[in-house]
Amino acid sequence: MNTEAEINTVRSFMRSDQYKRRTFKTIKSHFRGVPDDQLRRLLISAGAVAKTGSDETELWGLLPKNDTEERSAVSAVREIFHGLTDFLKTVTGFLLAVGALVGAVLALIQYYPTPKIDCSNPKTQEEWTECANQ
Image (cartoon, rainbow, N blue to C red; front, side):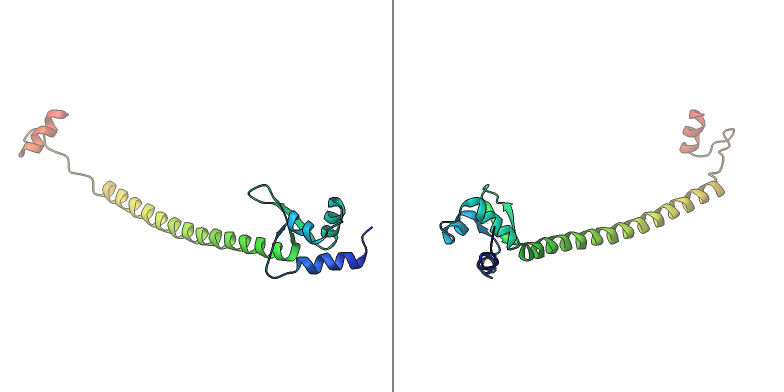
């Protein structure tokens, strides 16, 4: 069973502003004589959490320090998401405007149909070609 004094000592050690996380090996070197599992229990009781580093090392840090870092990452992702949402709203508005424009052009085309060519008396080369293709 861990005493309050042991927990406070570990917490004080882990509160150093210089380091957010420390390797278990480094922590162990400062608490000689404490078995590994007991030291891990002390770390947990002191409010520390373990993470695995990129090189598979066991890293420990106090939860508030790590929590702040994770909140910052979540905050950054949230800002990116809102930026993308605003961008997509703008693009959607643009596409709706283009769709309305295309609809208006199609309505004009239907309202003002191309004149029928009188194939009994074609006047230009284009009319001759059109009449030959009918």
